[in-house]
Amino acid sequence: MNEHHAREVRERGYTIVPEVLTPAEVSDIKAALAPWLGGLHMGRNDFEGFRTERVYALLAKDDRFARIVEHPRILPIVDLLLEANYLLSANLAINVHPGETPQSFHTDNSGMPYTSRTGIHGISTIWAFDDFTETNGATEVIPGSHLWEDERPLADDSRAEKVIMPAGSVVVFSGSLFHRGGANRSDRVRLAITPQYCQSWLRQLENMTLAVPPDIAARFSPRVQAMLGYSVREPGFMGYVDGMHPMRLVDEGYRGRKARGLPS
Image (tube, rainbow, N blue to C red; front, side, top):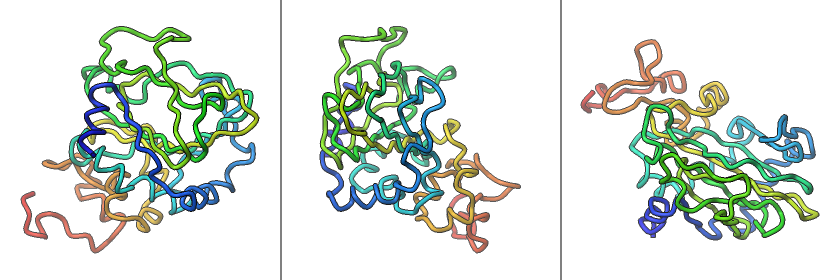
């Protein structure tokens, strides 16, 4: 099944994994996010959305958000699409209020200007914490647009499809896929959280080692710590700090590859 989802991402640019979270898990994550919602962080421009709340640096705010960053139903799909040692590039909540207008079509991580636009340089996920419907601002995608060389979407492109899915579901898509947040013509908010991943040789969208400093990172699993950037690209040592592995900032007793008898 993981290969099926990865193949859909390669071929049409996205795939939907339905009902990954139970209703209880959805409610728990929403409760973790509640202190930072309530109209406190509305968008600063039309792209962020003047009727949309955005909450960044989620792992610094509550440990529960790590559950979706490293979820065992989703990371195996990402593992098939990105190189080893990939990083968490962004991780934010997006709460679309009634009356919000559609975003412009955009990509999350096309690797430009140094790489081929059609390669997979990043993988984005959007987790639905409310049902995504025809009217409440569901994400819109243009299938196949991750393979465009020079073509760009029209402002209201007829090829766009709405991602309709129940709460607890996840859409996984190429960072090169053109997509946007839709208009919310309903009378309710539409909440999502979007962990995004990138190749280890690309700069993260959010500076994760500042957003989640070592004392907070110490609470997470080794996998999350590595994706935050407390890791090095292997083979090699890209990502070192003062000549040493960055995990030493998190764990003074960390033993590197050489100390563990591994090639370094």
